[in-house]
Image (cartoon, rainbow, N blue to C red; front, side, top):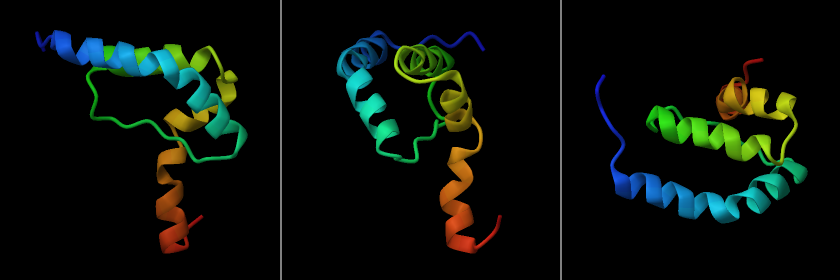
Length: 80
């Protein structure tokens, strides 16, 4: 609470986001399992949602933000 994101972190996120549209879209087209991390500050995570919303359908974004993170675990441990 009361934490702010350092300016350099925001600038880095903006730089990465400039070219990320094409990468995210192509990875999705190729079937790459894309998942959200939970360790980024909220403003960065929200920027990720905005970025993906420009190139991906809402259903794909929801899947990436919820169930895709557990997919590698299911494959390793044979759970469904």
